[in-house]
Amino acid sequence: MKVFLSYFFNYTFDIENIKNYFKLCNSEILINKKKYKQNKFPKVSIISPVYNREEFILRFLRSVQNQKFNDIEIILIDDFSKDNSSKLIEKYKKKDERIILIKNKKNKGTLISRTIGSLKSRGEYLIFPDPDDIISKNIINFCYNFIRTYNYEMLRFNLFTGNKIFFQNIVFGLENKIIKQPKLSTYLFYGKGGLLQIDFNVSNKFIKRKAFIRALNSIDGFYLNLYMITLEDGLMNYIFYRTVKSLYFIKKVGYYYINNNKGISKSKLNDKILKCIFYSLKLIFEYSKNNKYEKDMANAFIYRFFSHLNNKKLKLMISNDCSFYNNIIELYLNCEFISSKNKIKLKKIKC
Image (cartoon, rainbow, N blue to C red; front, side, top):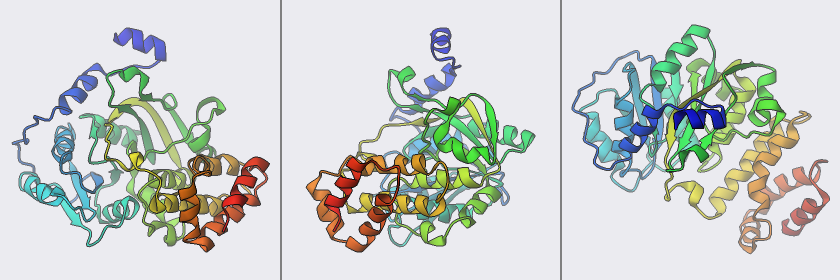
């Protein structure tokens, strides 16, 4: 089977990791009995915002504890959860001193929570898995040794989605290849062979902390304080690809995305989600003006918006904050690459 899939996709699968994936998805996971001591200067910081994820926390932490690389800190930011997420983290923290719990006094969204955790981190490198997914037991060890050896600023590894027909759900990246600036800024959207490839995942990135901080400092602080519950990964990747000096695309699968019906991606369009779409568009327009890739950068986000243009609920939401939405709509109406058909649609919903 491994040979067949490798031939069919020109891709090498780690069958042991696939087996471990299904094993870790088993609900009967016991708490790891090994006790870990805190290191004041860990090499890698694992940063994960948590919001109402009590049923997934143990599975996630077990995948972290199974890492071959132990010189880590595990920063969990409880974003004012309404369930027992925080209590469970406190419980597991007693067995693993590497766990650091940060409690937000109000719900701030994924973007702000992730930034808070990153600024509190002490590791030389950062990784951002979500608390309802799991990571390969060797991925941190692999990334740390690889990035240190070749002095890259960021690595991108591949994802595996939770489906039994797993060979249909690999998220392919470029073949093992290093991309540097200024060409790197185009790879967020252009990928291999100039084909459109949109990177909306932060969870499969391993980045030098200094590069992360530089990325944050490259944009107006206004954007880092937004309440983002969707598209925050796309926004951060846009910043990463603009600022990091070098990125290596690894074919290795190191992350297992587990379909979660409670995830925000399953939510229906509402005002909070719509605001996230428009804030992302605003950022792209502000920082990519006169950039030859502006068309793809903007269209990567607007597709979600256009899919709801005929929705009466959408028009009602926009009418609640006319000045904000009209500002973004005007930007689009002035863009040459927006089709006349879509401009007509935009004018119809304008306040």
